[in-house]
Image (cartoon, rainbow, N blue to C red; front, side):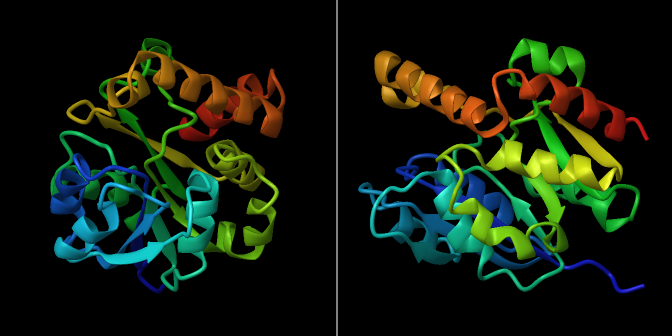
Length: 227
């Protein structure tokens, strides 16, 4: 059996302040053949910082949203698996990255999803963050479906990916990340802009899977994580 190989993909929009901490954990990680930052039309030098830290950089001409950025990055992946990491994480370390990769690398799970220490209380209570941006997934799951991403909303990627994972019926590992946090949008953008961004994200999710679709996804993903 051929050992899995991994590319790390980091979509980023105006994350010059937090991106260095993320790149310190992923650039040079022994599991990664490549670390690719997709600079989604940033205006704060995010892409230049990524280059200075040794990452490959892809740039979009304007801010098109996370799904479009991931679409661009996924087109370049040639390894068997992709590791998706958000650009704003705090507390990320190489050991934490290894913990996310391990269940897939050892074959105990088909894919893995993080559960951060500051995930909403309800997600930590039920044991899964169904819209976590940190995942390890096989490219066979996505490679033939990249064109479908063109029809998704800006923040529809994670729930679209959930549907693909659920359809396989294969085990998903939920990896506890108590030391890792993701800043609230209100912290990064200010109260009102942050709240509007949260509303836009939830609206995109609802448009992708329906208002009650998340309930079914959570139930099915919990079942797969218990296998």
